[in-house]
Image (cartoon, rainbow, N blue to C red; front, side, top):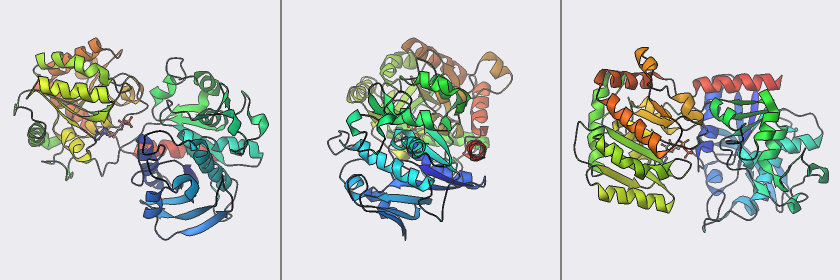
Length: 478
Ligand code: ADP
């Protein structure tokens, strides 16, 4: 089966978040399921630079305000179409914002163009290649199902995949014509969303299926608490909304052969983790204490991630005999709070403020427990890495965290299936209680080793998710 995946970023070419990981990893995993994916990406300079010999598959003389070409080739291990449109994508700054950090003023046009190109391919622009299914990722690609709807033509099946409902793409109604949307589309039953053009709203409304990246998040976004204004629409879609968990790249995240670790290990040689633990302690200025449970945090330092609760939990963590290692960056006040905690508790709290892939691997390979107190979490990848590396995840019971960690309740411990600790609701008190519970488990070596071994035996690869996507695609292609 041929599938067109339309995304505004894909690892390893361009990445700002989990969307890139999924768009980059899923095609290879789907190959094993007999699904061939071509990925349509914007022609950002790094994407064009990575593109091997490419064929000019289509030329648009005037595409959203300038000339554009559709290039077909391979880049970053993906079969890609690249929308080369210098007036839209060749500029300094990030993918969505300029060097000053402000969103580009023409983002509506930049990503409507991406969706329009995807819709044209879906409708047969390239006679040699027509997909059976189109997968649109996040708001940047979400006008695609609307363009197909308003074309009135026979079309492939469509899936709208939501990686984070918080980003919805809302733009002024005056842009309707410039985006190539018909006047009658500006209604409640079209692209209109609280007086704006809602890109994600349109995708959620018109796609055959809506997926998000965990079953629990799929349920949460249908509630007023988690729906961010779209819960009514999503409830109306009924069983068309479902969740498929993300995986992680089992080759990059493989503790048995990870060159970024001080010592590699497997489930049967988990004692070798001590060398990684010592390396983390040395790197972050923590005391070389072999007995203290080493808690870690690897995250964006934001409210979504519950990081405002972390400083308040440190006293409990230290009373429980623990150490804390923090790797993260994000909101300036939260960065300052972490630095202050490290300064106040030398040898017990250490931090590295920044984004550091190598240190993330080392911490996963050496820490005892990973704290993930997110307020909402569509899937979460860091707890999946922790499971694979024998770091026991201590997570808020939300979204994908609820789906991927089995709480060490008395029953789960007795039956030997627990993989971590969950807590709810997300509050300073419950986080502190979870830390106390984790420290107590740590002092029961048999139970702790069982938690670690169960986590390491959990399949967090893309294999099962790819099967689920393949089954979904098969259903809507038919
Ligand atoms: P989100 O995409 O919402 O930030 P996820 O848990 O889905 O959160 O994915 C984030 C990924 O990036 C995880 O693998 C996490 O370990 C990693 N990460 C987050 N912050 C850092 C950092 N400061 N340095 C290195 N890796 C990080």
